[in-house]
Length: 105
Image (cartoon, rainbow, N blue to C red):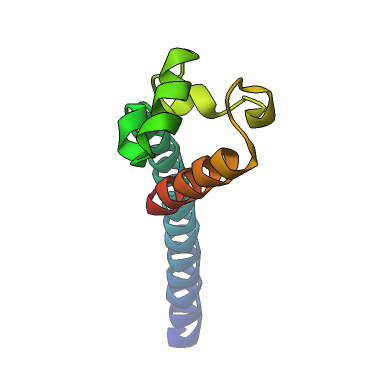
């Protein structure tokens, strides 16, 4: 009789542990997703920084502001080669600054 009671208790413990593990795994997944969403939000907020944060040379910064690029996110979907006044050297300077900026995120 004691064996049957012990088996039932062990089975209940196993079920409780299994349910706890499932709840914990679900909580971990939710936390990972929330953290991922937070990181994306922070990236977009940081990209709202003024173009001056890139510490570009004055001529390059003037070219970009004259073309209407006032924020970092303005440069996201732009073909840099098509920006008037940017040559190969300035495009390299800009991409290097953008790489440094994004590596901080």
